[in-house]
Length: 270
Ligand code: 1HE
Image (cartoon, rainbow, N blue to C red):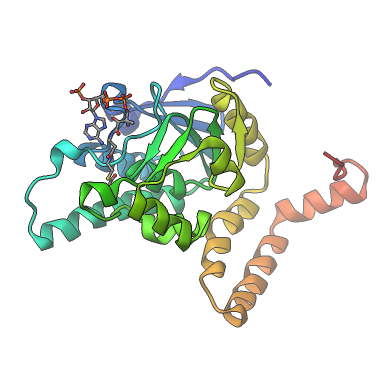
């Protein structure tokens, strides 16, 4: 698959100085663009991530987020860690929550492409995406423990859902760093590819995702994680509603008919 022609996004997205945002048809590509600071996230960048994800183009069907340079993201910009009051600290963390909620619960599935450092807030951002494509150079750490702080960008809620409370505890208490192979074995990444191949893989996946019925993608990204948080009985109830809504959509009816008319692809062995 060739990487499609991307055009610089316009409007409010063009004004976000720390992100480079481009679109190709239904795919939007957002790049963290502070390579000199290893894409460390300061207050401005977290605000820009939020603005970007609540202003995605109306025709977007899938987003890819990546980091410019050799590292995906070095986490919180430590140069901005100043004396904050308790109230200011809560507001700071809540700003990250709002931004990363906009990533996870925004209008389209999001794929993160990872390389080099995926640490602290960088791992929190990656865990807000729906899929992760890691390149061989990726490594994962939670140096908050060593910096005397705690996760604040949703990491305590999202990261254990990827790798478990026990492993996150180890990473935070001991500073243990996982390499790309370990990350793949623990399902931090969904795909592991050679260095330099991550974007092409993500765009290939994004094309598949963009071709799905929008309501199916909505069910997967919005209902699935919420059902996982419910009791089994409540979850099955929500599943029944979501399933009926998706099935009732014209796109579902057309796709099922296409299969029965032998116009749609079969499921084939990988
Ligand atoms: C930074 C940051 C940063 C780099 N904040 N400036 N995150 C961390 O504890 C990770 C800290 N960073 C590192 O361990 C390393 O920088 C990396 C492994 C990511 C990359 O190493 P390297 O050798 O490629 O780069 P470098 O030489 O260390 O850094 C290049 C520049 O980026 C340098 O600035 P310069 O002015 O001297 O050129 C670094 O100071 C700067 N830089 N990382 C500020 N993080 C919502 S709560 C989330 C809590 C957390 O995320 S805690 C984890 C913080």
